Length: 319
Image 1 (cartoon, helix red, strand yellow):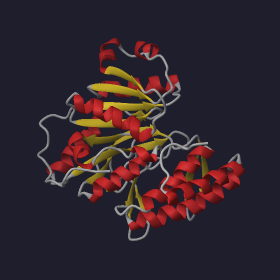
Image 2: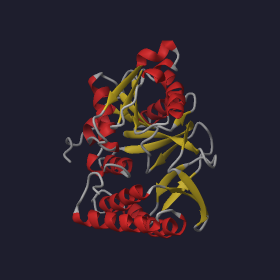
Image 3: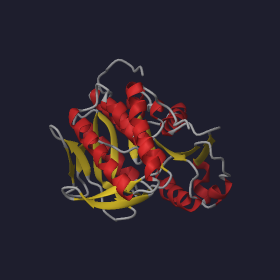
Image 4: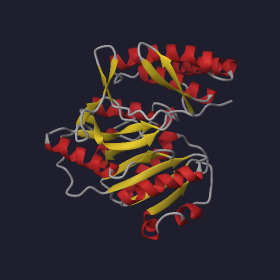
């Protein structure tokens, strides 16, 4: 994937204009309406990109306050093109309309009031301190457990999670999940778009590593809160400490294993992440086969994911 030559950080824009992009795929209409109601007042415009599962957006618009309906737009894709492609379509839409920042959201994430303002405030604060801000993300509160995420930093050969000490804190982090990420458009112009070849899983991780390899830094805003969940269910296990492990479908196991190996082979992937990610795959193999359903199918798809990664196979899973 080509990208523009490295340049000095430009001065902050005079005004932050944020467009939100929600990527949907067979969305739960009640949760999606809650999301739109929560985030629309915080944005100048909101684009819903549906990834090949056409549904009528009219009832959703009718459920939003009449003063906000003009902010909501809808783009239906002809088929499921994957997470990276869906985000890229939304980013292109926001770029064409002159927005300075884009906020990416999953269809089941619910921002707390003031989340976008807290993200923008954190970005301005770090820019004022001379940082090249690549992206700013919120803390997420897990829907199943109620726990808050904190932010992850990489050590020499491992990862550690740093909790927030105060709501006004801004912490540097080596990871920003895509949902809730506020990204300056100029950074996207320089670093490049999301990697569509990964289709799903680690699309956000790959972009953040690529941005950081070009001198950008990523931050977590402790005062920005978002309800979010990883996976369709969560398993609580003891692995050196109590951890909440997301249980995904067998197809998602394929993408997770494939894309982890693909990213581990890229030159800008940090060594500590590679070690931690490969160890995590080994642990997930045991957990998914021990506690997941369709164990035989999971095993076959995880093995195929690793095999496809080593062969350089990307894109959607082909039966």
